Length: 219
Ligand code: CTP
Image (cartoon, rainbow, N blue to C red):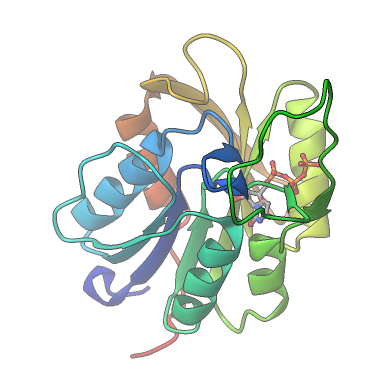
């Protein structure tokens, strides 16, 4: 069993912003609450915490090292730089899957009645890290509005994760922006456990206890 004080945990939280021009971007309603709750729970468990956060209005958890980022590409580079030293990666961030192909240097003027924006895929951070992992435990989140468990199991397999947290979003009281949540933790062997409904803090504490890495990257 690992010694809690030597566990290094890398958590991502919040949304990313993908800019169209200097004053417009696409994003999502993630507030970072679940990721920050997990950071607090990990700190309480005695872990070292690196927290990579998109633009959020959350208080910095006392004891975590905070790395603020804005875009998916910045989040990718920050996670990439920290991944080798971590024992467990927990990706709660709602990373934008697409970004505009062109980012205009100046504010676009509304000269025409309609406008079309071409998007390209961002790097799948979780999949990229999972593919190059050595002994790290890799945990993903699946935010879904429907068929939550089916899609979560598919992501667990396709991204070769150790665990996925299936989270229904788009309903009052769960998911984005809420203080409460209800999730299902699914392990790579297919076993699952339902957590909540409860506060994000109580669910975070249960999650941290359940995903504790058994082996460490360093002694
Ligand atoms: N994720 C990531 N990099 C991305 C997109 C998502 O690391 N560019 C991570 C999220 O942090 C989350 C998991 O992948 O832990 C699932 O993200 P989600 O967007 O729900 O799933 P996708 O795989 O992007 O699939 P889809 O959008 O089709 O549901």
